[in-house]
Image 1 (cartoon, helix red, strand yellow):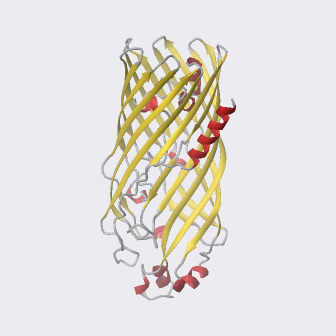
Image 2 (cartoon, rainbow, N blue to C red):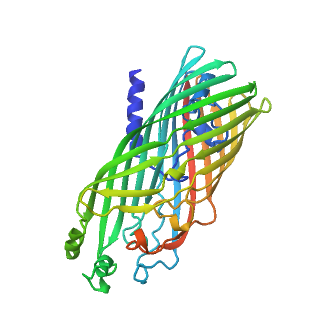
Image 3 (tube, rainbow, N blue to C red):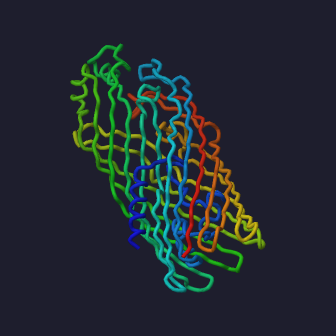
Length: 440
């Protein structure tokens, strides 16, 4: 037991320093076996202990088990400028920013313990949300974003109870930690001109660098039910609550000496900041059907309540005006179908496809921090049972981000000094995963 506690602690530290960017900034990569099916049937499949995340009620179907998985997520986000301009009408200087996507290695850990015939306990440690994009400080969109890094750690103890032979319930508490780093350049040259303090030639020639960091803890919960109308069919429903964070941290500025008086006059000084962010609720309905001895079919519909993400507002204790980015995200649906082929007792082959809508409503609300778009998943996986106690899973997926997401900002309101960033993104995401599973 001491060894398990140490492993949970080490995994938790590892999770806290990793990050990634996928759909919105939700990370569904919470189990390796499920990746091969594009997470179709996630709340009903009950393949292994990763069901602690997808539907804790399914733990009643499984033996005591320990799983450790790793997911390499490789997003690509390449911007092509299309006439971006300052509020003064001059072209925004700088290159296209290269590839803003940041690779990440995401681990998850699951421990399931049977407590007699009717009860089961589970502990999951994972990363349910995260993003990372990074651009050069001199790229064309630098006033909107340089670095964006948001990471979470979720510790999820759960219990499940088998009410009848065909009906189980389960639930858990989510103890979450969130940490964020956001940075961008500030066009103090243009700000000085608009204030009548600098000539027009100062525009884009006096860029300051602003970096904000903050973190917070919060609590959430999750519930699930599993219904088995026949021996070969399972229906699962699960719900994860939204989580409200109040991040507290600080802002640091790097300001050119020539415009420091202007920055000070606008209260752009190092100090404390706060920001509220709500991570959305997620509801899923899944079906799993064993069509024959060798073939299983599955499907899933999941809804994510992204409409709670109305804006990103940073408040400064110095008295500086709030920094606001209006998001106006919308709720989304993710649909997936998959199949598993059980070649024999040792070998399982998995396949799946999914369609995942972006929460970003239009080009006017898309930002280079999260250049998200609708996507189609194509996934495959393989499971190998080495012995009654030890097994391994591999998974891979390619996410096609559709229709080259566009950004169409105007240099008005909150974006007056950020500029009218206009252009198109070429995006995709590649995922490779592996896990080791030990049954005891």
